[in-house]
Length: 393
Ligand code: ATP
Ligand code: MG
Image 1 (cartoon, helix red, strand yellow):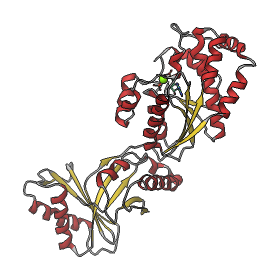
Image 2 (cartoon, protein in one colour; image 1 turned 45 degrees about the vertical axis):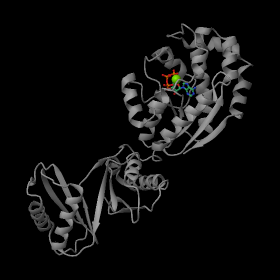
Image 3 (cartoon, rainbow, N blue to C red; image 1 turned 180 degrees about the vertical axis):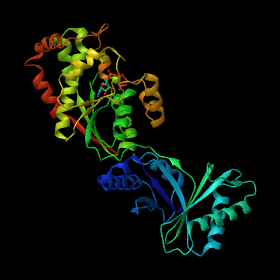
Image 4 (tube, rainbow, N blue to C red; image 1 turned 90 degrees about the vertical axis):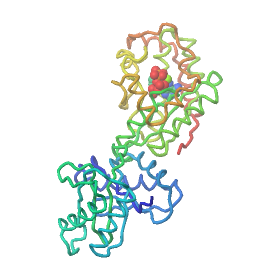
């Protein structure tokens, strides 16, 4: 099957009035970047309020579609066959050949939509549609025309050449990455945070990520798992700078000095402090976590409030109202689930108390944290200085 181009349909971004071109340009850029990873030549052009991806040479159709379906901002991808303009009789033959190739033995209802982008074309669009419809009916005796509720919309666009398409492949939706600033994702090896990153990227936000590990309590393999997850998220979000922070000494200090039932909440506050420091350095305008209300002790409304109290940047928690099952569904769909469930230890789980506080009070937690005065600041400083940054593509 040879399609010569893809028509890229976008919806949400078309609503943006004067900013429309900003969004279109961002989308064109995302498409170019994503396709540059593939073999073959692709020309991505914006013309007459549409975006086309032209494929002048050999290319892998399946792979190309797969990549396009991951680009945020695209609602539908229509594979297009392009024919030279040789008059109406030839056009009818071409469209019939297209139908034979794309919908062999078609026996449903259809409607022909003709659009004259080239207004100098001598025949009116109604007449073109009627002629083509007749030719299709002749070639597909089981098919029928239905202008109100057709099962198949056969589009014919008359430009300097003739574009024919009828298939809509569902795109990722959302907005092009890069149109909505950048945020810092707290990425663990779990199921939730990669999904949270995906959801925020879908709203046009570029991502940086931070992972806290605790060697030797957490292994190289646990870190590799997070790198793998970041790679999977990057297929949607574009390149991610992944900051890997050694959290061991901070965790040990908290473990030594603070009440054990408060460990998780205090640890989470220090994660936020460090994430925010890194966010500031890389121009991120918010933090993103995979927290979901009530999921575990550290995600009760009281715990989230206490965690939040150390942050000055907004914290985005796109999964806040999701059940685990709903999160798992997205994780499976975006391809992170299988990696997330690999059984490697996470730094949070190593020092957890049997009965963590579920309704922490801010002043109580702050009082406990005072026991860290003079000890924790240099450790935070050191952790920041020794942060390793990986670029994930
Ligand atoms: P996840 O499935 O994303 O690991 P979780 O249900 O295990 O989430 P927690 O361990 O309480 O929940 O973590 C809540 C959020 O805190 C995570 O979604 C993530 O954003 C962040 N987080 C937890 N541990 C780490 C870590 N080691 N490095 C970076 N971020 C982390
Ligand atoms: Mg976790």
